[in-house]
Amino acid sequence: MTVPDCIFCKIVRGEVPSRPAISTERTYAFHDINPAAPVHVLVVPREHITDAAGVGPEHGGLLAEMMTTAASVAEAQDIAEKGYRLVFNVGRHALNSVPHLHMHVIGGHHLGWPPG
Ligand code: AMP
Ligand code: ZN
Image (cartoon, rainbow, N blue to C red):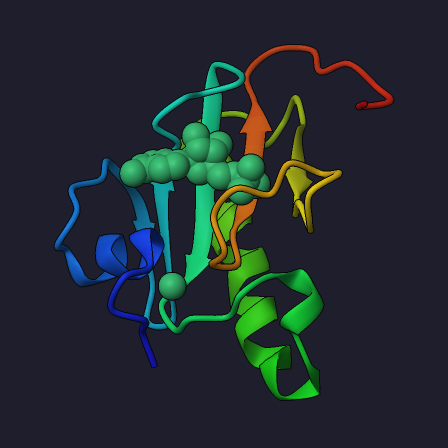
């Protein structure tokens, strides 16, 4: 199911343009419009799930597909060997701004830790 007014559902449906990275049956990965690092790609499920707190046991296969999509993004963007970070933001304190589940794939330079 997709949600009419959700920006990432619109991207999945092709109604809002995006710069594609990887496309799979149940996931889509596209470049973040405001990159935080040389590589910053978002992996989303094609179906609407609000955030990581809304993921349940029924989403196990979908989550695994998101992880393999992220690994494919890392290979394609040439950051797999040097390393990268996978991030889910949940809620206000984490500055989650888009209420459609998305995993950030961030890399391309040395990343600071801890965040925040
Ligand atoms: P979050 O803060 O975890 O909700 O991350 C949302 C991310 O979506 C931010 O990094 C935004 O830059 C990115 N974003 C918002 N709108 C778009 C868009 N139309 N195309 C690509 N990335 C977007
Ligand atoms: Zn959505």
